[in-house]
Amino acid sequence: MTQELFARYSFLLDRTARKVKQYAQHQFKTGDFDVTVDQWLVLKNLSENGLLSQTELANLVFKDHPTLTRIIDLLCKKGYVERIPHPQDRRSFQLHLTESGVAKVTELRPKILEIREKAWENLTESDFEEFKRILNTIYQNLDGQVIEE
Amino acid sequence: MTQELFARYSFLLDRTARKVKQYAQHQFKTGDFDVTVDQWLVLKNLSENGLLSQTELANLVFKDHPTLTRIIDLLCKKGYVERIPHPQDRRSFQLHLTESGVAKVTELRPKILEIREKAWENLTESDFEEFKRILNTIYQNLDGQVIEE
DNA sequence: TACCAATAGTTAGTGTGGCAAATATATAGA
DNA sequence: TCTATATATTTGCCACACTAACTATTGGTA
Image (tube, rainbow over all chains, first blue to last red; front, top):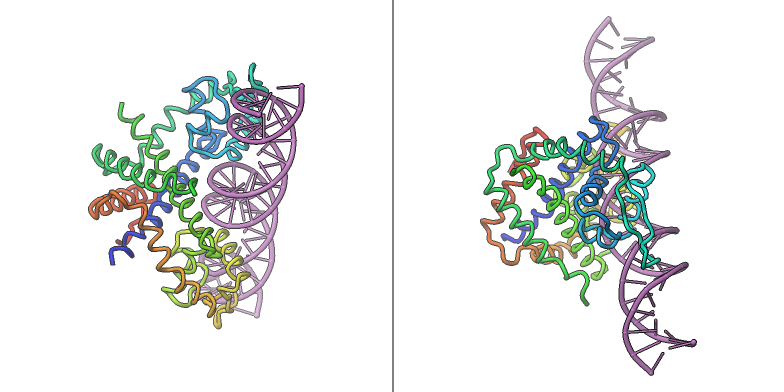
């Protein structure tokens, strides 16, 4: 009985996640940010963590390698990121924010924080803590289930 | 500043939504369900609501029209759905579950409810209510529209 | 009747997400 | 050294999301 009800979480979760991305992407577009939401996530993590390999970055942003390869291709094309050959390991790159990339992060960070705030109208700080706890519990419940076996 | 903190919700939300879909899709695949997670959502809603136009269905599942067109194309190709010309409006179709589609829904429904339950280990019914409330509030904050239950 | 805005659905283009397989390089062990 | 295995990244294929533009049809109204 509650089974039917519980199963709705997947629909609501997916719908809200899409709305959040769609809202942000729309703001990005009207503000001429010149990056997508996912490209921003990558830029932001690069700016906070210095030189990273693609694998290290993939683990930070929880994206798979092919997806990250493509996002980085686009960021390189836009001139915000460079792939620098790793000095010891010729399989690998060190990702580096260009000057233009640093400037982009500096420019966008405050604007994006403002955009992100909109979602939390009518919600409290403890709502946020609850939300975070539940999301992380769900994540952990399902994590590893895919890889093993 | 809590602003920085709050902005993390978008990352956690996106990450968890992807994990939920990935987990379910993996189970669908190992169980040879012959549909994707999103195709299932469409089948399920068709089975619960009888004849629908694509626009009506799009509003139910909160997908945009181009996406729905393609999902329905795939479901038609698999023989689970038919597009029946609307008797009064030649622009429109009535979507109809085939016999094979009805059988598929009957077969999959209990299996999918079981798959969906996995996410709620270590969580309570009131967690679920909180989660639903917060998700819907975020959705409304960004959409401006009221959502029924 | 003739026009025109609104509606139903499709097509095209770009970006993202996931899986599997391929390539290149590194490293451990025989 | 030679080989097997592991790792870093890329490529190919398919599905989905969003936007914009397009076709066909409908329905209201001048």
